[in-house]
Amino acid sequence: MQKLAIFGGTFDPVHWGHLLVAETALHQVPVEQVIWVPSLHPPHKQAAVFGHRLEMLKRATNDNPAFTVSLVEVNRSGKSYAINTLIDLSACYPNTHWYWIVGLDTFRTLPHWYRGHELAQMCDWLIAPRLVGGETIAQSELICKQVAQQLGEHCYTIRWQFLHIPLVGVSSSLIRKSICDRQSIRYLVPESVRSYITIHKLYSDKSE
Ligand code: ATP
Image (tube, rainbow, N blue to C red; front, side, top):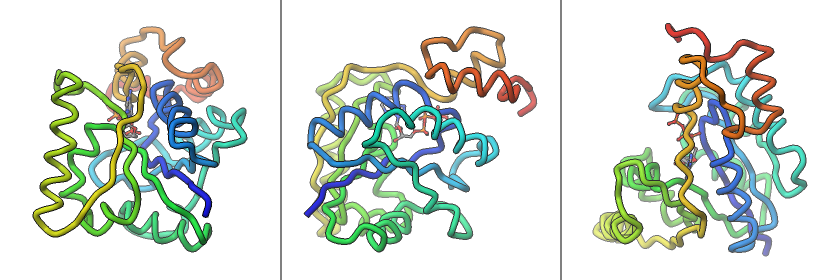
């Protein structure tokens, strides 16, 4: 049975933090491929045009043969729900053991996702540490255990492990803000992404 990992996100824009997380998943588990799934209509976010986000993602990932960008979200109408992504991808890739890559900030909201309890046990969770609330690593582990316990109360079990990456403080919102404030984003995103943003004048309008 092959092992594949899904990495869902808004990728608005994709940055080095995302790439490091995906590369670590490839080698740590290891998985054969990371399937990047940009959300078409993220449930809780407003995002740049899908075509731009997709193009930047393709440019950032095309030098790694183990990275695939999936258009599974494009073929579906309505909000982008993770469980539908996993169901659709399972039909495309039968005989697969699935992993889901997620940052700690996103993972802690899993019990509130649409059919999150069901999804939780359909794959293994690869959690990237991320100190958005100023937590220590020990506290991060506690948060994961609490999520697992919350799901356990509903008789759902969950398999998870931390990805061994150094903490990376880069976020898409930081990049959008930096551009808006006319600060450099060099070394925060791949050069191919930076030049795409420059050519298409993305994120420079303060009213966006
Ligand atoms: P924003 O700042 O707009 O909220 P983001 O940087 O969190 O965006 P997303 O595309 O929303 O980017 O994230 C996709 C996934 O990658 C999420 O699970 C998120 O937690 C994770 N992630 C993003 N950046 C990092 C990072 N620096 N370290 C660990 N995980 C990350």
